[in-house]
Image (cartoon, rainbow, N blue to C red; front, top):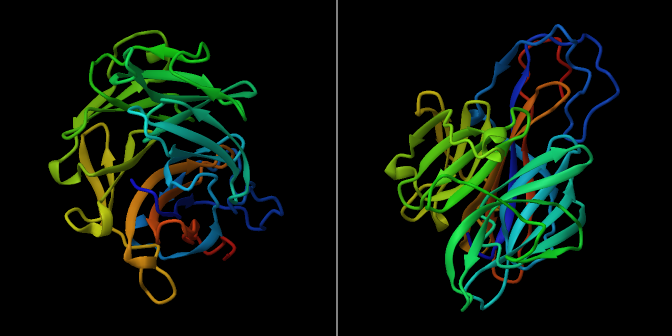
Length: 335
């Protein structure tokens, strides 16, 4: 994950198997009709995100010159949170966490000094407050990194925290290894990516972690050929896993869907979105950055976002692409 232009891509995954004949005027900010289901219309059919075709959605301007590392949508407020490394010569990295509207308008940000790379994070809503779960560097007296804590902190625009801030609440991660967390907001669960290299993936109850209970729901090992990590997102017992190196030299850019209960691959696809109108990546550069599975809290409709970085240094352009809803029933109004 380097300092280049970021693209975000939206795959629409699920639409209802039964729909209201007349389309309501109310739609959420992702363009999903919020009245598309009645209380008894619960069944859904999964479309194959590996066969969708993207279209341009919007542009995203980031406050730092670096690119996004991770992005998460607050599913209650439809706001987008993005992490970026802050350029520094310190042994411990710092990152900026920024908040955007869902269509990419910058709102505000906060700084996590010596918070690490910002590789992944998760969002927890608590009443009217938003809390962030993240890894945070542990430093010795010489400011060298000696470990990594699992922390939770309240998102507060304009605030700067550091490793000694009382606003950081630390939790047991049940291992001495480096852990990257992410959260499934609707199911109150948390995923740990444990270790670097061959990663062990753990699914836990968020309440268990908050209460210091070491209880695994599921775990499995990531295959060796999918270890070039660029992001993950949890949806129930489905884990979306994003991999690939710069320009896919040794590791193809891939999105893989794992079944957490079995530790098996359900879908796997090589992707190449993010090219310009000439069919090339700007300045001949591309690298995957971040993935998020969004669930509409009103309808249960799901959409998958994924990011890619392209372009030359100092002239990064951040675009969002969208995979449109797949029409399953004739009664669904075409977009």
